[in-house]
Length: 182
Image 1 (spheres, rainbow, N blue to C red):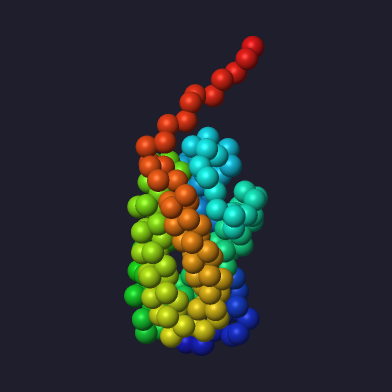
Image 2: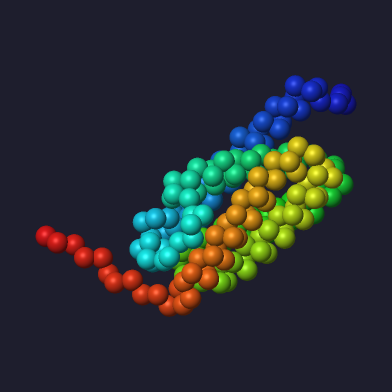
């Protein structure tokens, strides 16, 4: 029996993709930041001069969680679009930009490579724009879900560049060991 799936079946198929992909994207993003020691608790980062536009630390966790949910949902839409022209390219572009995204926290917070992290953000942005354009040719909604991510990448790039300018030699900054008094 050959039948086309009903709209309800198609929605459930997309829902299964979303329920699988979104948590994977969020968890990988969380692990990247945790393993790199990102955030205000990072003593090296705390010692840096921050730009005036730097939001409080909790904003980054909230923003990235929302953004990972959005881009994960967009990716799920593309994975669900079986048989769509450009689907393979869209998947490759998304995975490439996401892999670079996951490497940013270790590069910046873990290796203290502020300048290299900025150029990595530029590469992530370029790949993300390409991803968004290809997503748009497959599912317009998937492309629109990527737009806040592109905006945040621009903001993150500005902050990264300002930190680089405000902290020449940040790569070689040595923070004294933490002291505990007993």
